Length: 403
Image 1 (cartoon, rainbow, N blue to C red):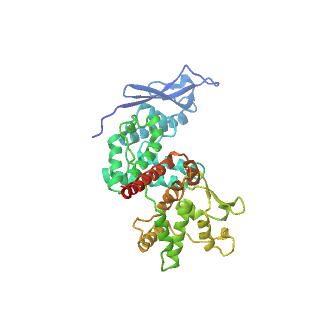
Image 2: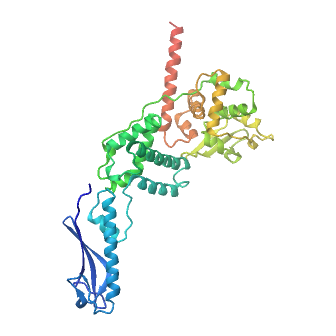
Image 3: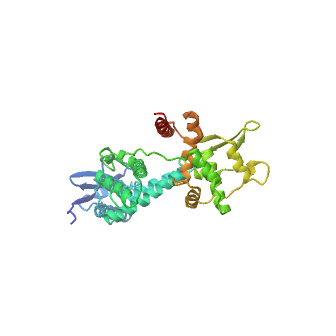
């Protein structure tokens, strides 16, 4: 049941302030919960024609009818705005009421509207300082929030002021259980939500920072990779269709270059730069981060491109890159045919380049980071840990031989 709230409006004529014509300003006085605010209406009249009892201009003044009609409209607008705020179910102050009466832009007070407005800001930055993939992540996050509100609370919206640590915990569990999203990916979605909500937290729309009370931690995951023997199995396997052969070749090419799927799809002649007689490099900005990758083309990678070039120049290569989902489906078939037990997917090729092709062969971490287009060495360091673990395991097998 709604609380019975008393609000009082009245019009006053301010004799203390006079314009050049000698007329005094009319103000709307609002009293709400023992607080008072005066809002200038922009209307003036000679002070002697102001009727203090009725709060209107005396009809003896020639412009009285026009001014009084405007006052009625202002009063009606104030009542309407108050009722909208009252029935919204969200807390508001007399200053919120005054801001809307003055026509000032109201900041969104509900979660969905706020996220939508922030996503519109992100959309304007897409292709400038935000990649298309990052923008899509924010759009996907908005859809998850809308689904979460419907499933958890059976509502289409939620007040920003009510977001607390319990809300965040429930949303995180929703991502993990209902959406079947892995822990580390769910943590990334929570980080994105925090980024989006931070302006609302700083401006006190959300009065207490709920992220201070709860921490979402990523778990250390050992990223898989293919060994040299497994790469050879993929190269040598006889495949029944040209489609499977093309996908296998593109996959091996990514193992030799470290290209992510989207960068493989975008690769063209303009990205392959000749430095010396037989030295070629892929120089390309990564779609995901915008960081530049500088990748020396290995002879084995050049050989693959030559297979798809109609001329003697391998840079004239042309191949169709299937959708990522289709690639991963076909790779499962290719893996089973080759005898590779590890589940193949496009990103595994990138891991293989970082570990088997480069770090395991003594390429410095800084160089690998540059080739992968990482923004910092920290992103590359977990590959070094994988290589160190591989050394330990390999030497463990040697110890068993030399007892």
